[in-house]
Image 1 (cartoon, rainbow, N blue to C red):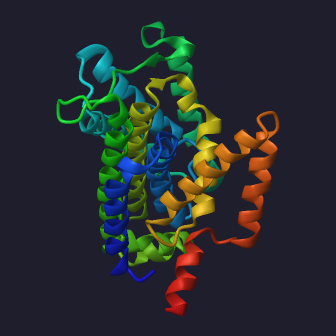
Image 2 (cartoon, helix red, strand yellow):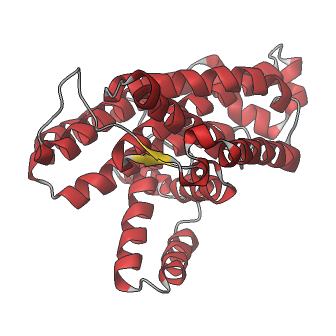
Length: 312
């Protein structure tokens, strides 16, 4: 897709969700909202993948965002959707700024395993913390929007609309960032770091910035997921959660900011359908369907956008 068409496509998707949302069934709104949440995490992973880095620990920031949103309601009795997302983003960003100085020094499998280790440290701390529900976690307050609590049948729509607005805003910011000199460094870093340094750019600084942006997006996604589900627990920081995000990012590809959300929606739809058709062997059905998608679309769903752009 041409860069100039991306904002238009994002605007069209936002308009569709806002206009069609009231007529969508509750289960569809739930899947759509989770897709926005997971897509935000995958969007951050896309930035790292473009630079040749794979993080196996994005669940760390996803969980931080969720627990920050839950803590607002549990301790401060604040349940506004946007305030929860801001809190999740702020908590994830602050932690990533500190940890980024360490992670920016590593590459390859060392970067991935170190990020995974940090995520599992958070998991261990939460499991032992009785004030935050230990292994059971805790429920969060019902969502409000600008201080108003929607009616029972409008809650899902309100959360989905807030998710669409947040995802669109984040996607536009990332799209703008990819057009900056710092954003354009990613392929060069992946290809040859030494040449990037000879050009006068700092590879560590560039990776640090990308890592912080990816963490902030994961924090927003975690807060949004917590608001959607209404419950949080330490499993949100577990390594299998990070694995799902990696799978979505690979399924989506790195060609466009729309792809992570499309990948998350496809993943969620297949997961739901597989569990509905074969509740005892849904992992097998899910794996087979996703394997077929990867075989026939090795560059991810974003390759479909490139094909469409070449044909248009």
